[in-house]
Figure 1 (spheres, rainbow, N blue to C red):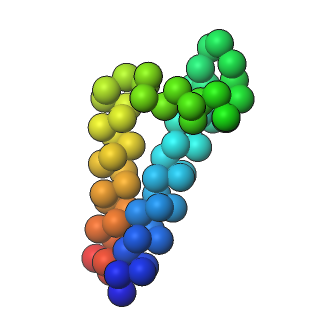
Figure 2: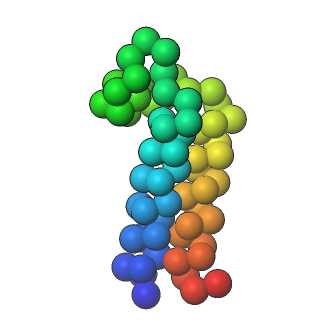
Length: 64
C-alpha cells in the first residue's frame, strides 16, 4: 500500500508543477526546462500550494 501512496504523491507533484507552468510560465523563457530550473523563484504561496497538493495526493493515495 505504501507504493500507491508514493506513486500518488509523485503524480500529484508532477501535475501541480505542470499545471503551474502551463497556466503561468515565466516571462523570460516559456520553456518547461527553464521553469523547472527556476522553480525556487516562484512566490512562496505557490510553493506552499504545490506542497499541499502533493500532501493531499499522498493522503488520497492511502485510500481515503
